[in-house]
Length: 622
Image: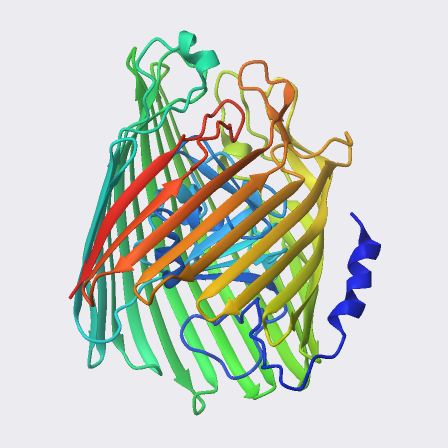
């Protein structure tokens, strides 16, 4: 990584602009603590953050949350095929298991999976109001996990007069989806109810070189139904809300590409979250209390009466207080307690497994605006896992502005506890290790951004590094896990945005990420050295909107699904486009094309990605 090149750009960024320049909005917007906006500085003002709004999701025609994350700097997505197939999201090379996902303030990483990775391909984007991707170690603010970063998801709430909305879409691979709902606000009551369904014959997942090994039809059909409702009551200063979300799906897939008999998956998921918010001390003291429960149940079946059932759940209670001591000083204190459970059932070899673990933590943060253009933040937290010693974490950060230049950065620590399967699971081959220690990390980032030519051009560069120790790895033969390796990830994210008019924008983002295992000297599996995205969006007329995007992923190492030898996957470049036309206030037609050049690529190795796909749809609201 060319550090000198990065440092030399500071001179360019610090050059004065003409007096006619308009103030430039910050690329990395302020995070708002759930409940209400705060006038004092926020502990995440110094964090490297990307915000995706509901408008962005609609413009990009994102079907799932995974679709929206593919273009975010520092984010790398691997998916075992097309829509519905398992997807892992890695931030800055730290791996999917080191990304914490929170919905309305509650972590929902999958307690039933081997490494607690949450499969974001299951969550449709229809009822999402905002996604925030926060890069860097964040355990001191959000608890266990988050060594690579945190993804915050906020669902839609009812606003304004009553509306009924609907959407219907059809396209390649016999894919059909429908969405219908109501939303609104009346006096002190608000509501947003959404129901959706998607079905698809599925794109071919198994590469042709393995087709002869499959004894049954190699299709990947998907049938999924979603129902969500968010109900609220109260004013801005005192309110309560309930989110209930339920989905069920039937999916055909392969556990391994060479498996002669395909597995089928029946899946159900429920998420319930009760939140209360109230203010005291003339609006300076904010209280947010939450109670939530998340559960998923999976039944895997295939021929010969082979069955596997898995159930994972997590219950949590949390309380966050934010106190604006003055307009330049804010104090936050948060505590939570959670219990995770895992249940396994397998046939034809009959055995039942039931594991659980409790954990909790308490922490606080202080944000201080030293001068009008200088802000510093600090946070610390202590977590206690059942069977593991107390683990402290911290983060220090700051933001400084001068001559329209914005500099921000921070340094912090994070940890991830061993999962229930890694500690307690046992079968004929594998035995869990109850003595596993948490993985820990120390990371920093520093970035600078500046507008030029009256905001015609905006440039941004961020450096980052993260060191991970006590990595949990499998022993030879996969008989158990041990704490062994140390790893490092480091790199640079560069962005530029050109906005020649208010209607057109061109955005370019490049992420350079080095990763390596400090024991073997080899790069970490599955992480590309380079990722580039180019997005062009604009309006031909006030009613007609178009956009296009290009995604490039460089070669990366992975394991072959048959030999388990380390191999390198070739690079790939895919092109997509979207368009929409507003017929009137109630009706909109839209369409998109995916993989327009019909490129063949695998991501990860041995999982073929969808070919050219075209989709058209109709939206309505009244």
